Amino acid sequence: MIGDRSLLQAPKSGLDAARMEDAAHAVLPVACGRGEARLIVADGSSGSAGSGWWAGRLARDLCAAPGRAFRNARAFDEVAAGAALRWPGHQRALLAGLPGSGVVDWVARDRVDRGPSTTVLGVRLLPHLGYDGAPDRPGDGAWQAVSVGDSCMFQVRDGHVVESVAVRTRAPRVVRAGGTGAVPAPELREGRWSPGDVFYLMTDALARWWFRHADGEGRPWTVLDALCASPDSASPGGFAAWVRDQRDGGLLEDDDVTLLRVGCGPC
Image 1: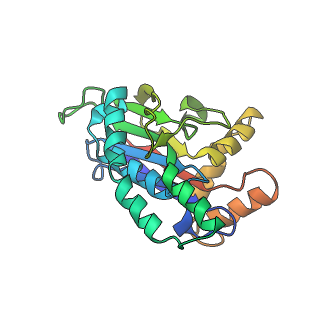
Image 2 (image 1 turned 90 degrees about the vertical axis):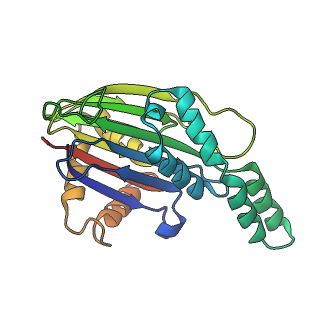
């Protein structure tokens, strides 16, 4: 069912990968297997302590959640609430590592007290909507998506975007680990896929780059395809260099960048 998969990431300028606040996780079936695939990207909010940890935690838990979390708002809320139960322990560890006094310490403690937040987008690929492990016609597939915030998904077929989960905003809704606020109602979507379709999941900075090129009748996926296919995509001369060039040209914002690309095969 999955023909190929690529994950490309780059941190903000001047930061190493360990300090990224983006996260991505995927669960794929065995080669040519008939099981489902799960693809998750999350973007921890800058300015909130522990946001990278929270993005990774929620992405991992959604990857492992029951399938109904991708099609039912209450089930998604339960996953987010369960993931948030791990925050107090991480919060204590962050507080223990802060210096004992000073203005900087006060600001840092306030950020930790407020807790982290993240956007999240998950896509579930199935042989069909009612998949129960039984054989199905090759390529007769369905997808389900759940999202909160401005990470985006684009489904490309035969050189055209046929479906998308795309939000253009500078003030995205977020899922918080701390506090008493309710989880925002997620957007729930579903559709069909065919062999040869390609899914692109990306966090907000790359999504805005995509919009700029697509709005001008461009084909941004061809650029991303070439980057994913390059043998040195993960090297200093690969994706990271492309990101620097785009930033230097004012075409890409200086933010963490994540791209998860998956092609659908005939299996």
